[in-house]
Length: 141
Image 1: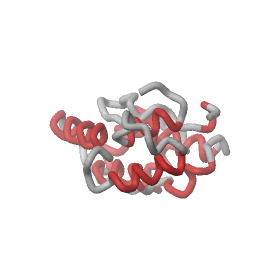
Image 2: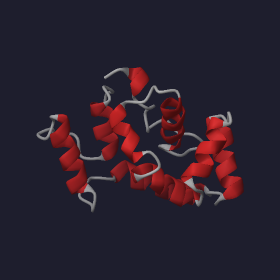
Image 3: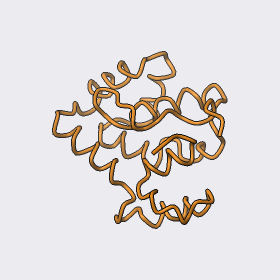
Image 4: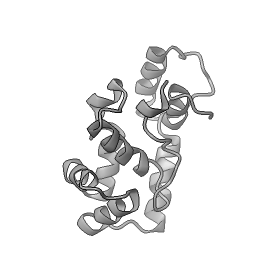
């Protein structure tokens, strides 16, 4: 996969949060026409939606802030100012949720479907969405 067309690694943190940087990177890349087409349908949905819900902000409002030029850190501070400021425990809860998502939970069937569609259904080492995204986007586990 072309790195330019895939979003940043969700394991990179912004303000201690996994995934936030990936979400805002997808916003920017989509606006520039640099995001892989299979990501378009889920912009603002799926994990993006969960992240916004956790922060108590609307995706479209966050998107407008990001496209107005906010850095990752500024975008997160905007979320805190307009939604819910996370404390250290909230961040641990989010990160633990994301790190385990897909491993024997309600989203396991979706993960297995995505693995099959991507051609690596038999990869037992891909048990979570973080692992799926890494393999699907050409990164190491």
